[in-house]
Image (tube, rainbow, N blue to C red; front, side):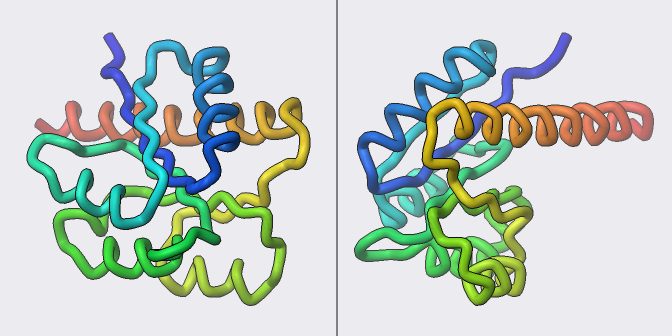
Amino acid sequence: MTATRHYLLVDDAPQDRFLAQEAFEQLCPEGVLTCVGSGMEALDLLRSPGFQPDVILLDLNMPGMSGFELLRVMKDDARLAHIPVVMLSTSNAQQDVNEAYVLHASSYVVKSASFAGFLEQLERILHYWKLSRTVHDEAFEANS
């Protein structure tokens, strides 16, 4: 029996959150997607007792606290540093990609402009992390 996977999407654009919810319903109906619209809202949620996503999908350009700022705070917090973070951005600027990896993002994905393209991207992301976590869980169980 596989555990339910929990994902957190941090994106200030309501239409992007809506598209992600639609995509999740199609691609990962067994998963739980929580959406928030700001870095501060995400940080509050991540610091609340009992909330532990398996993967965070993080927009880069947001007002207030940017994706980089949230990533920096997370990686400096021992309780949050281990959570994989996939940067989702419309920016394909090399300096943004470099900065994301310097801050220990797990991956960087330039958002597709089309819903079909976004579905493909999300499907690959979900498949990768589902497989990664399954291998991790099996290794943990074998060593227990």
